[in-house]
Image (spheres, rainbow, N blue to C red):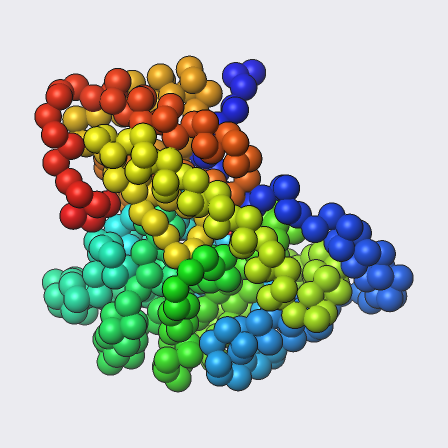
Length: 383
Ligand SMILES: Cc1ncc(COP(=O)(O)O)c(C=O)c1O
């Protein structure tokens, strides 16, 4: 098999900082303390102590009370993405989302037969200023069943939805009675600047469903995520759940690990990720200024790289792979699979020295894959 020395293709967390011994101790304690509960079923909301810890995580971040009874644990946040769509739509229904968004969601919505209607993204996140016109254009017959929004550290662009757009999004959705699915999966992978508030912290609108994950602050292999919704919506969504609840052991271990809160450990992991993010951003500024521009996200696990439209993307993929460099092409994130001139670098699990070594390689591949010598023709990822 081809060696994948510089593998930026798939979003993962950092194995170097996985807290092995702390998780081992937590697992030991969880099994000793909860073996009796492990011999039972626990309903659709899931492990109560972990729900309380996650409700506390949310209240502390957002500054509003979150009731653990309105929070359901899921098999990763991806199960919530799918379950919510299954509960709120029929095949053929329309949903609004960002024009570039998480590939897993695109695949799930496609499989459910949903028609994704995209709004462009700029440095302030989803172009909510275009939402009303889009809804008017769709009319009552094609009214979207919900709006899916990656509000914070948007995957793949890294953009944060501005406060003004957050408020406008809620106002428009509430006025037109359209649910909002807010995916805040990366919300605590934070590097610098202010943390924008979650939509549910800004409004009591009953149509907001919020989802978050343990995959990004700890590890996706745990398959733990959750969603929060007001009672009526919670009931509608849970009515579609038929898996007899999530993995109780994983939840028990993580509840034990975080029994004194999530922040100390999360900040430790984020410190190492910030170094990696800066190595990517600084490396591309140093080596690739003539041929690309990239995001400098204030959180999340990705850098979004723009390159000239004359880059032959097949050639780029081929010569990069020959040099053991792998990335996710922009088309993976476009709701209609368009080969947009962007690529995404997932840096979370790549060793620091491999990041530093490989940014000149990526820049050189981009140069060699171009079909003209024209100036690159843009300044940033959006302008
Ligand atoms: C925006 C977004 N939502 C949801 C997920 C699903 O993550 P998980 O199911 O591991 O929580 C991902 C994973 O990359 C993601 O990027």
